Length: 141
Ligand code: SF4
Ligand code: SF4
Image 1 (cartoon, rainbow, N blue to C red):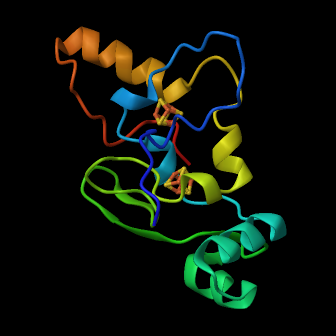
Image 2: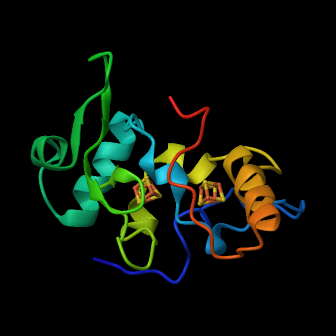
Image 3: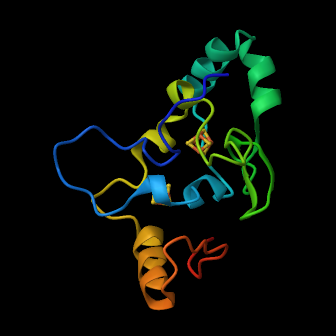
């Protein structure tokens, strides 16, 4: 597996616009979302990355979404967030398939701000702890 220097969240859309979050100082909360979608083209990319058939990639790396209507990334246990995408490095908090990650990962958070990071930064300031990790966030679904 490729181990990139970018943190999981540094998968932002290339842009010259400023952003108001720092994925390098976040524990990749967004990689703990329950249903991270995997489209057919995402699955083909994953299959190429691991040099396996698409069917094998589907079974090995994805599962049914919560509503059972689509495929999403498989999870594994995580000390910080209980569960994260299986491709998140538990120690470095970086994506281990950066070049093969699904489009949803490339596009998130889709704007200049990340709601979780806003909350995290505010709590870090309030608690005077720049390394604070917030394992739960009230608006997670
Ligand atoms: S939750 Fe936000 S700040 Fe953290 S890695 Fe994801 S996009 Fe970056
Ligand atoms: S594929 Fe990478 S960026 Fe996407 S959720 Fe998994 S670890 Fe995070």
